[in-house]
Length: 51
Image (cartoon, rainbow, N blue to C red; front, side):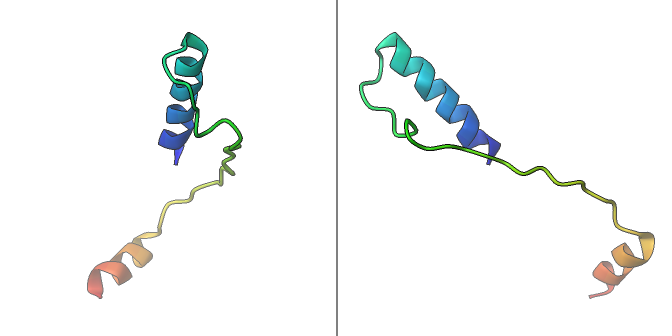
């Protein structure tokens, strides 16, 4: 979903330059909750591959 955030930034820049008259992300707030990722154990990977 980070690509939406990047596209929103680009649209804001284009709006400031006057290249775009309407910014669809003007009233849209993009928030991401980052979570801690953990690695799978070897047993869990083996269980997935056996399915």
